[in-house]
Length: 393
Image (cartoon, rainbow, N blue to C red; front, side, top):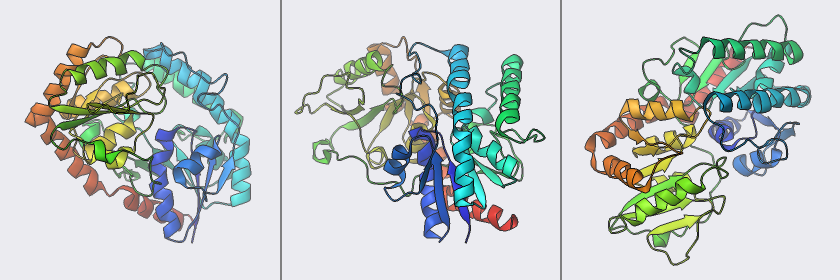
């Protein structure tokens, strides 16, 4: 049996896809451990018994790590790299090295934004796989932006000189040994790269602990149901948007019942409200089995989980990779896009009516769902990782 060290940023959307893979590796008898700047988050998502090596690093929500909510576009990208991803890599590197020394993995599985995992593995001569938990960089995100792409390459070269092997050449976002992409070309589009070491495994949804309690008895089976969620990292930016969603949904309460995730507590909550069920968190995966549409920020996890269930989307990207993922949704035909910062309740209502009543959107979502399921998810990812471990012995 082999040992696998998962190196992940302290971000729910980047840990969740790896959870099912790690669980299945453990079920196959392999040793599994994690390295993360937020061990409590890993244990909450992967289970209390998860072996986690703590690392230093900025954690979202902590002093100094919060991002101004009004940043968009190139400014948001620069902030993400200069004030989060690169400092995170520098801070995590000593902890990753200690984890490798203590756990002695055969393979390092590095999230594509946990650069310390790839660069430390490279320096130690360990084989490493990339866990690509967002597909934005595989759909031409930097096409037409050569200066941005060059700036990123230079920052990564400087990072390698500090924590990696100065003689190394691999992009720490993309392992030359094994690249696991938790999506498929049916969503990414024709730009999806192809190479023997690149494997599109679709969403990894297995192995997660049970989510929060939910009042299932309050769901109305006589109405269409819509989930509204901005993920776990956007509570600071979502007040106006969530309010507009609620207004649009209440205008359609005769035919739509809504479930709204409101982790920031920005909406008023009426415990007996039968039209808009507002909760701080929801069990997203089982809930999606009963939804007819999703309104979200185009976070990669939420988009893929909705499409796994064949549910069309209204996407309102905020920042980072979300505009690219939103473009994938629209180009695939599985949903429509609205402007997060300026959308009105009227426009949101029109978008909802479109995805709920246009057969082409549901058909596109069903097509992507079929592709996701055929890709194999966590079991297929595990097979590739086991093969890499065997080849590296």
